[in-house]
Image (cartoon, rainbow, N blue to C red; front, side, top):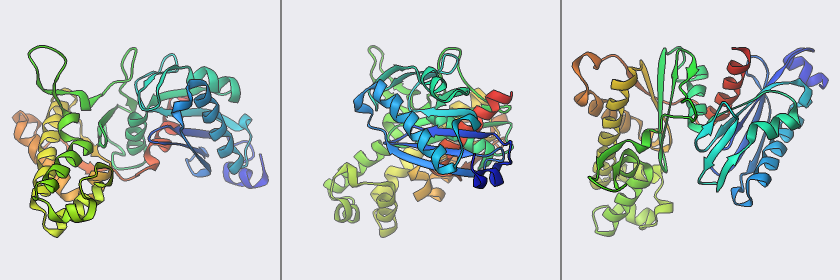
Length: 330
């Protein structure tokens, strides 16, 4: 450990590492015992190269963060990894990551062999929720639920200081709650197919194409990749009422999902995060809360608050590091 790092952590200080695999990049950060950031590294995920290459890249990213922090691997007390897909936390396996093309990745075994410290896995959305519980918008909650609408809709929960995890797999796959299931087959509508940012963008592109959203058409055309949350918000501000209606309808559907979660878990805080919430907090938060209240049994109304996430992109990496500390120290 360098003199610089010793001043930050103390001569005998242990450090914690977080590695977030969400999105297209791996983000690794090193923290001292008070979760002050000591070092950071970021690399492209490049999941198409396969599991073995991905595991090597994870180790390399952590190594680069340690180097920037000026500490050796021997100073690590634990590593938390947030994974984009279902995980078996007990076995330390990323069961499936469709966006990366990985299955049954032995993350814990690989990283523990390289770094010689405990490694704890959780789903990347779980990591973000634990970050908001530990440091952000849900701090101090007894039961915190996080919902993050994006390309899909991810969810997670912290109950009495612990992530809610299933016996064999991570859980809280809120986006796959069926809303209008077909009588036969696997089709039908889910929260994700009706209320994700991708669903909103698709409906917005159609509105632009048929002349209902001229401002969005001028800004983005009908290219889904260009219809970002910020562009949707700008179109609404410019007067595209059809876009506001599309966003509001999606928030109403999401509110129905929130009502389901409230009936199941009775949380005191629900955190909404992601680009849609950041771009349109008043419209989105207010509509979701109003929609949920309209669908709740009487005693559940007024028992929870809906708040916007505070930590942004830092929630996942801080959350999985904090979860590792919680798991190691009990």
